[in-house]
Image (cartoon, helix red, strand yellow):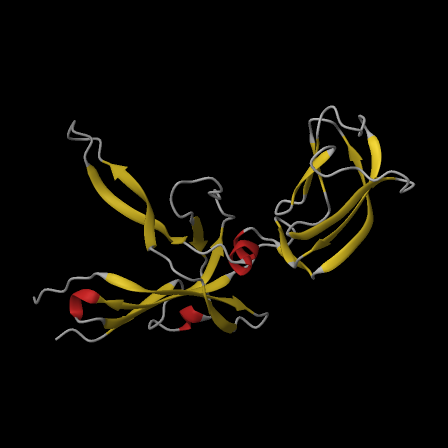
Length: 253
């Protein structure tokens, strides 16, 4: 038997599946430094009871299952939406006038927008008093936060109005959409064989939500994705494709 080694690189692609079970075009998830398919067989074993050694004398397979796991480096809205079972809302650049908020000395209050491009004024409700930026309050433009400086003119729980400009932003809201099945594809190459093509297709991949999202880290963050492969009866009508996944590669010499 000739040797055949594998060092894999490539793209991880994912496609939605319509009501007819047909894929609707694959999207590249971006750089994925790892991708693993795992298979498992469940079994029942019979132990003999006449030798005194309790030996296994029969093994029957009762089922097979498969899982996929991969790491995504890119925190795109599409990836976050897909693997947080979420929806995305986009907010265009806008000028915000008289946004109501309450001030608390020594504490932050969140505005409705982030990515502020400018802050015009902070006033009382009647706009008869304009508070001084740097004396009565400070603004975190990126996070859209107002910090009320203790000892200033803003008292605890005072009703305020904010006027500012905000740049475009997007919001991904987790667990606002139903989980879906996807077709998962590895469009890869084998560096151990002069970058010969290797394509792996999992027909019905049901991801779990992202297990953890690295928000504070000294390294580049990533998203760890895991999920199960469900049986696809439409593929298993022949013995060529099977009901879970297939691996295609160049013919071995």
